[in-house]
Length: 377
Image (cartoon, rainbow, N blue to C red; front, side, top):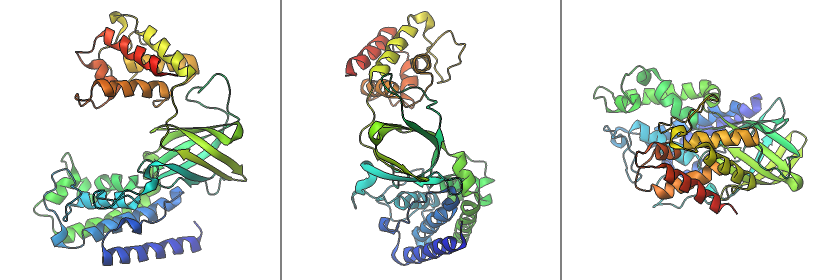
């Protein structure tokens, strides 16, 4: 990072921190989303300072963290102060009843990416209630399976995306010695609730956390990253494949080392003709009870002789498209129907838990795929 840029950011953080201490934590104080790994440390320092401003005095400290963070509370545990800081740092309202969510939380968003070797990185700002940093390079082709048979992309970009705020979550529990040496199931709650913890300890914790995110933020971002692929077709339209689903890309342009495009976060890509083939193949894979794996763990070895619902979809995707993506529209459609069938069952992993539910029958599985196929236009 150039010296003048670093000084500017540090000054911005200092001003931001002073204002936060004077006025409390407000969502409009959010700093611009960082676009590179090099900038994430300073950004996350600002989040920690915001949390410290929220928990600015002993009277604001909730000594009994019960594991939840009520949005109407006026006192905060350490964890809840950090949680509020992360939410507001993304530009969202901590208490939606008191202030409306920012309109850009779920709408078409503008993205700008630098794909040069020297400054690779990019951002779309707020995206699915997170602030992802992207690192992209041009790729020879899609690795997670063809989208369609009737056309191929004119160009493909692939890389990683990770929430710029994730280092705060990680380091708050694992990086600071005051917390990390504890053996409890949630070290931060344990530290907060420990009767021997003083408010001076809390302030020391925040200072140590600032140091951790500043120096380890970039490495933490790598730890939390997920694959992303973008395929572009004629007219600058295409698809971005993310951990949150597949979404339409429009207005794509590439000038020099800068990519620009828009993502419509309201419209997931619908299942199409190739997804239909995938589901038709999947139901044939689970042809009888003898080949139905009733103990799914979402691991699908290539040499398997029995298959769960999840693994049948994965196997069909690989056979028909040459790759697999966890959020492909075919699988998302199956999850949607499982959600409708099991509203009161509190599943943690929809396809897996529905597959393993002792009340689910092979006839239910066949009807599940039949209904999914019927919804593909």
